[in-house]
Image (tube, rainbow, N blue to C red):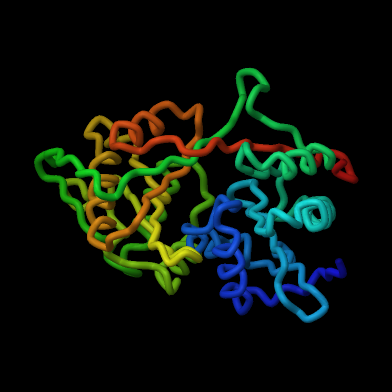
Length: 311
């Protein structure tokens, strides 16, 4: 099959990237929350976006080196894994070496795939990626969880003086970024990234919830996303969710999540999903306690790029 690496046109190509992701929904991890991920600063450099087209210019596959997550986001039809995935991974090799020493470079890159995607796993292993599910103390795998949208959402009392509301738009982005950075102990979230999420066509302000402490300080956050799949179903995802360490004793993350679930229910989705680390017990237990059930296992593959060639 003739295919070509197309020079990225950046945001102008995002609608086509989203359309392809929805067409490959059953075989792609990040679809519903793509507006969030496509807003990240990794895409400030068009060279971090790979797009493969046929001779007619139709988009066949794409990949993004998501520096904030150390992750390769990719979308391709599963029946073309043997053709397109090697080309994508060769591009990742070249790009990972080229961007080393820049803000977009990382010493290791990760690829997440569903555990039942056996051919995709084989190709990753052939290209030097290693499954992290059983590597000892630092083992890492994930799960894809689903919640029945008709399941009632429990009510928990708010601590005295605290409140839940939607983010106050652009005027509160700076405060949100400070909270996000403190929660995850990283500077990855930026004002530009968060501003861009507010302008995404799929962004719904009522699904962007914050918990506010007495005095007005933002203490926790949770965002919901909606997308229509190729079968016409409205599906939802929670991403991200977090609570500042100063307020975790108040269970504000749970309160913010419950608020988003209730707000999602008002939109009548057919399914609600969340992705979480299998070994992150606190988050997993929280989702499980609110009715989420594991429906698919996710494997995390890693490749190190410490030597010059990265192979």
